[in-house]
Length: 106
Image (cartoon, rainbow, N blue to C red; front, side, top):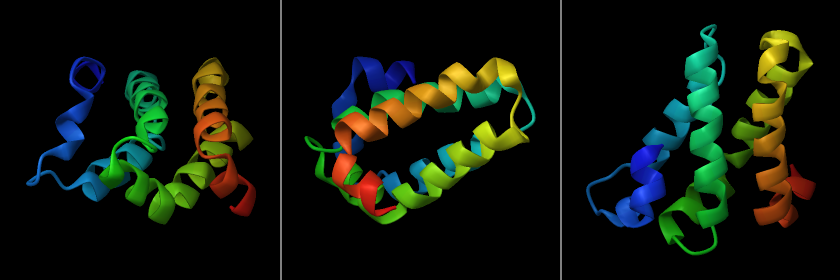
């Protein structure tokens, strides 16, 4: 998360598998440990605003964003602790703000 804040062009590295990083983040949203889920939510709230400016990020959000939305809704629906709801809401807000056309399709 801190690396993404300080150096968002990290996702332009040719040897970085953005899809794998994204999928790990989605899986981390389902972990039982609150600090892990909180960090994953922070990762996505930093990542999603860049989907328009960094092509590899935009592509993976287009392809796998539905899985992210599903994980967020499952967390809100009861899989995650109530103390994490604000963090999940931040992801929904970022999806709505930066990926609205995809969000409405999903």
